[in-house]
Length: 136
Image 1 (cartoon, rainbow, N blue to C red):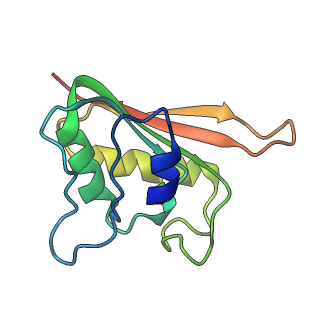
Image 2: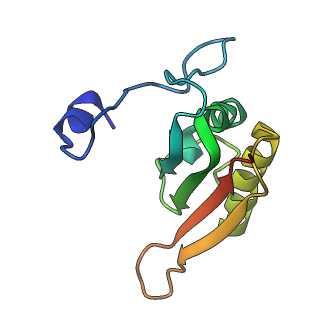
């Protein structure tokens, strides 16, 4: 989302516009102290991250113990923007990839869990989630 969209969202009491794919040799850094959040949601954008392990290590850092990260994805994407690892794969491979991102991002995260939120059998787009909880 861009700054104008974030600013217009009356549900938010805080927001930051940040490109997590920029930074050169420096790892992406979220502008929050350790253990700030009970939950972090990455919705329909994991397929565009060029440094997902580093991004999710940061997510683990800003989660409180017992807090969860939820990564939601479907089968639609901008093919010219998605990372090569994502393109040409099916839902099972995407779920395995996202679970691997979380597993290797931080020892502070528990085992990833995969959920099928909508299987697409009803003609609507399929939707999946991978979740991990920060250990105490």
